[in-house]
Image 1 (cartoon, rainbow, N blue to C red):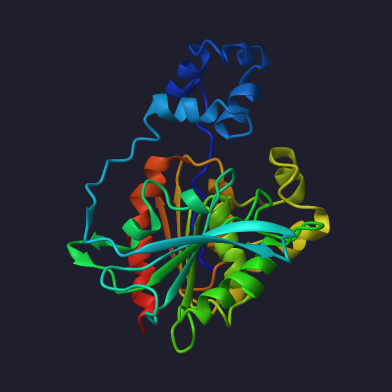
Image 2 (cartoon, rainbow, N blue to C red):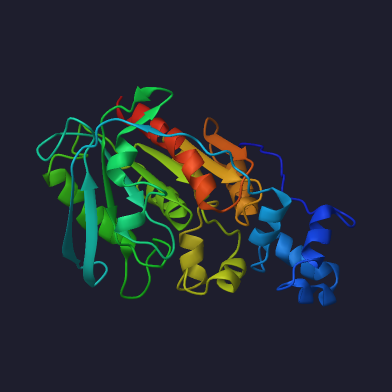
Length: 313
């Protein structure tokens, strides 16, 4: 076990955060509920948490100046997914100096809730992600694919199996194009819902996925918690048990793993539980930040460099 210390406690007494909360017009009415109302906001159950975090400075992440090399080409398309029972869109991006016909490692980038294949990467396009210069150096060449997975947290629902689409349709389509075809490796990456999905993909298919990087993964520690926050995330308690990233973290024993979470992220307690369950050697980054684009973008260069390093072996 990782033995990561818990860092998500609520401050006792009347803190600056409580004072800020009481001064917020829209959510000040919750003060009538007493300390319990403030605690619910602090834990992210109520939507005022992000407002409080921003006012209290917990979401402040220093902006990073990103450098890119020349962009490689991208192509987008659509196909009918039998697993999802609908037409889905996808984009394949190539690194600088490569294009269709190149044989390359592949990163499967899973989008977050409310997004699709067009905005799976935060603040940049897939082609830009692959052209990033990290610490002044280009990434080792790899391709990236994004795809429409819907709002169902990348786990099977009646009539819609986005994970089955990824493993049974999307990856074979990429491999036929020379991407991620052995001996070339496949990595998984995602943000928020997609971060959870990337971990789930690696846990369910450890012989297919060679490395995984998750940014702010949306992880709950119980079905009741998940259902109260997003009733559509899992079809049933059994579906949650089958797709619980914490319970099944041992399946990642042979896979390089990098997970990053902001200390003020409402999903942080779930990520702490995951960190404790991950096999020894997993890289877990807890840093200042919230469940916001600025934190996602701050972690993308390191996540991409991590995957490039392990997929190039």
